Structures are given as structure tokens and as C-alpha cells.
Image (cartoon, rainbow, N blue to C red; front, side):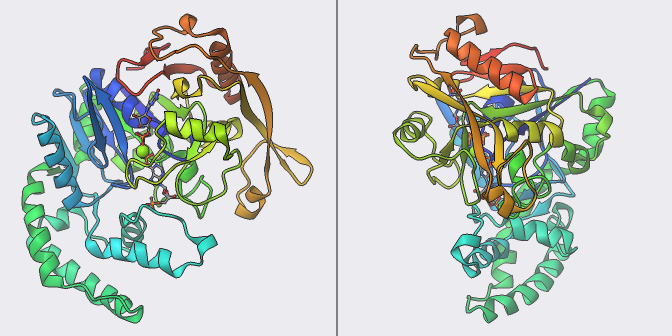
Length: 427
Ligand code: GDP
Ligand code: IMO
Ligand code: MG
């Protein structure tokens, strides 16, 4: 039995899709447990490239069961578009299960996402992906959400949709927005419900049975721990918990089934959307990293903000998410940088601190304290073992491991499946 969780240690886009797809070779079940199509996970193999948003990255492994668990928020139209995209890419054979307790993202959530952002003054905008994620989770906790089990039951869907739109249309009217047509949404979305209904099931029962049968289960986090509603840089966060701690709740399993937590981390840092980013910098080197690493959002196409690696962040994520090993990604992107900086602590009002302040104003006043290490110039994109890395790259990985107090289990030297070096067998 194995329960391995893949979590983002930073602000998302660390390469979780790549590592999930890689580890999925040996997994029996692959599970997305939170978030929705705000995620954008890129997978490359055999000269093909796929961007997944809702469908788990185990979808390319014919034998694996892919689960969208109860903690997710699912846009049915986007899910069907993604299945169509996969079909066009030759991916037809798969095993998919959608939780009957997952919540459904509907057009009014997307409208509300835009409206709430629009109403905020610039410095307070979160810079969301505008996929309706926050408003769908808000409905869930306000107990007015529409779950998959409601969605595929035509009467319940119509009833709940009517209640919700009667309410939200008043809000849209108040803010000068066009009201939404209940009948039109019902007619369009009922068709999606009909197609998706064959996948909808109690995935908690499915997962518990998998563990009872001694199967290997891989959990694929979306976003990153610093975007966690509880442990991230609130309020500049998403509306779910991307930490390993949220897996039992978000999938309906016992915490005892989690055996390993692999923290996916870029060899540097990036962030999209707003919010303080202590190690951010913008100069020739940042531009080089953005260009070579193709640092543009998979979901929104926005240029990603670039920063040095921050080991305060890594230690924070290790603590709140219980990381047992790191997978250091995009190491190749740092080739040809003379000196690399690693943030080891923050300075807050002349005091050295080793944590992320809860109060965002305090966080904004934190200055990074760096050590500098020499870079390397050799092409590392074909490296197949640790000892083949240039000495300075070896030292860089060792330093990250030492400072984050976590062993490096995997490192990655390119976007393709084959450009992955495993130091510790995980599945
Ligand atoms: P995710 O959201 O965590 O799955 O990450 P994204 O897919 O949004 O962003 C990671 C990007 O880095 C994608 O474009 C990947 O193809 C790419 N990538 C992953 N690992 C590597 C690597 O080791 N080197 C390079 N150059 N690119 C990588
Ligand atoms: P993956 O899984 C990077 C960011 C948005 C915004 C904030 C809130 O690809 O790593 P939301 O739409 O969730 O309400 O936006 O969170 N964000 C991500 N940033 N990668 C992601 O997912 C993200 N999902 C959301 O940019 O700052
Ligand atoms: Mg991404």
C-alpha cells in the first residue's frame, strides 16, 4: 500500500503535472483533491505536449484510475472540453471517476469572480484566474452549493439553480450587470450533466477499497502551499488548501494512508497574480529565466513573476504540509547564471526571522537575506544521474536540501518525462 501526495511548495506552477505523470507509471489510482480549472498542469512526452486543468495527470496511463475527488470544484463544460482535447490528442482509453460530493462551477460563479475583483481597488485585487473558484467554494461553505449528485439529478439541479440565480441576479442587477437566464443555463448544462453522469460515483468508497486492496494511490495537488487559504499569504491566495494535510478531508480517506509527501519546488521561484513575493527581482537575469523557463501561465498566459529560491518558504511548507522529499524542477533553467542567490531568512524591522508572518503588512516589510553560490555553464538537459551534474549544480541541490531540511528525492532537467532523475524510489 502506498499513498503518495504531490504538493506545490511555492505559489504554484512548480511542475506538479510533470512529476504526477512521471510517478503515475507505477500508480493504480491518481487523484486530484482540491481546486478546479484554475490549475494548469503541463505534461510532455514523445514529442507531445498537453495542458491539463481538471483531469488528473495520470490520464495518460491506461491502467490507472483517475479520480476527481470531493474537495474539487468542477466546471462541467471545461471538463468536457478537456476530454475532447485529450481525444484529439489520441487519448481515448482511460478510467475516470468524479466524486458525487464535488461542487459544480456554474456561469454565475465566473461572473461573481470577475465582479468581486472589479469592485476591489487595485492594490487589493487578488489577480484570480477568473474561473469562478472562490465563489464556488464560498457557496459550498454557505451551504448553497450544487454538488455533482445534485447536478446529475435534473429536478434538484433545476431547483437549486433557480434558488441561486434568483439570489445572485439581484446582486448582478445592483451592480449594473446583466441578469442570467435560468432556463438557458439549465438547458445547456443539463446536457453536460447527462454526459458526465456515467463518471459520477462515491470516490471515497473507491479510494478506501483501493487502499484495502493494497494499491498505490497518487494524490496530485494543484496550486502551492503559499496559495493555501489557511497557510498561504492570505488574502492573496486561492480558496482551497493545496497542502497534504487537506488530502484526507478532500478525498474521504484516513490520514494513516498517507505514506510520503513529495514537495515540488522550482530551482527558483515564480508567482502569478498579486501578493508580496519577497525574493522577486526584475532584471536581465529574470528575463533570461522567464524566456528559458517559458514562464507564462498555462491557464491565463500571464507572464510569471520571477524570484530566487526561498528556503523560508520551503521550511514553512515542510512544516504545514509535512514534506518527506523534494522534487527540484527546472534546474536546467539556471544554467549560465554566474551567481545564484538563495534566501535563508527574512529581516523584519532589524530582526532576523525564520517564518512567514501571518499579517500581510508584516510580510510586505520582510526583506530577504541571501547567501550567494556560484552557478554553472554546462548543458545539463541530458544528465541522467546526480554525479553527472557539474559540481556547482550538485552543491546547489545539496544546499537547498540542507537549508530546507528535506532530502532531494527527484530533480528535473527539462520538461520531458525522460528528463527526470530519481534519487529515491517513491512509488
Ligand atoms: P504545475 O502547475 O505545477 O503542473 O506546473 P506548470 O505546468 O504550470 O508549469 C511548469 C512548467 O515547467 C511547464 O511548462 C513544464 O513543461 C515545465 N517544466 C517542468 N519541469 C521542467 C524542467 O525540469 N525544466 C524545464 N525547462 N521545464 C520544466
Ligand atoms: P497550478 O495548479 C499558479 C493563483 C492566481 C491568483 C490566486 C487566486 O497550475 O499550480 P484563483 O483563481 O484560484 O481564485 O486565484 O491563485 N493561482 C495559481 N497560480 N498556479 C496555479 O495552479 C494557480 N491557481 C491559482 O493567479 O493569484
Ligand atoms: Mg500550473
